[in-house]
Image (cartoon, rainbow over all chains, first blue to last red; front, side, top):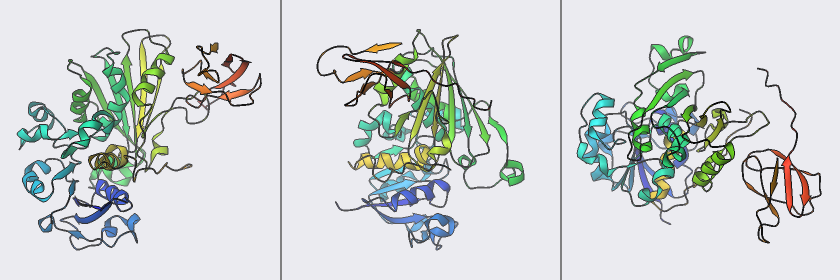
Length: 348
Length: 67
């Protein structure tokens, strides 16, 4: 098979670096160009030191981009939508890893992002990027918008319950504990080591933008409410979503096992993690570092109808670059697992 | 808690995990009293009969997680 020529726009951030790490070893891919305005002319390993000797690529300016088969857009939010016409001219297929094209409804975009979308007429051209939900659409797609990391863990954790109408629609509470790489590689006072180290920082108790994606993907035509909070903890990669839902019916744990097994039993990157003994009985983000897995566990409260669903991912992988490569594989009819089979490290 | 095979020849060498509902293969040569770990939920299951294959949840030691 002839290699697919891809370029990465905005390759100096953490997500761009992770994409490079994956794509450099992807058997069906040739990376044509990687752009960065800040590092034009520099070797990519200057910014991503883990890639020393893995590539001799240098960053180019986005103004120098040449046509290719697919563009990965790793630009800051509110950037892709302002340059999308040019990107469409350069490649017939695009995977955008920013938030610009995740929402289908422009009014919802304006509500959550605080400004009007520059190209609302294009929102429906993009397939929302979680493969487990939109696999068939992705196989035919030209444009995919990768999902937010917190949203990915939350949606995958709750999808089987909402799809089957098993939970009260307005009482879901999600608490995400997130690592520092979620904030990207731009520094600020809050990321200064003496301030950031050791924190348990409630950085977004309400109004997190990823709530919009969760509502969009879990509503199934109904009016639902999801109460989402995010807390930054002392971890570099990874996130853990603890989701509290209230069951409409008196389901037992064995019933819930069946629901998750039916939804995800054949999924290559989803594992149900719920064991009665051992150290890692429920999903643990650190074991997922560098992997494309989403681990999901649950526990039913014996004294109420509350079900706690716990899901974990590496935010830079299943929550960003890994998810995007999985989508890429689907778009080009390549085995979905290609380039993504790293099982993680233990101990770590 | 006991779990029994539903019926039929096809399922003869499988049993249902009483904890998570997984259909688990009964390894060849299994003897009564043997412990089998469910591959899905990790529960240790004690084989109490072979024909039909029947298991029960094995007693587990309470673990202290240091909490």
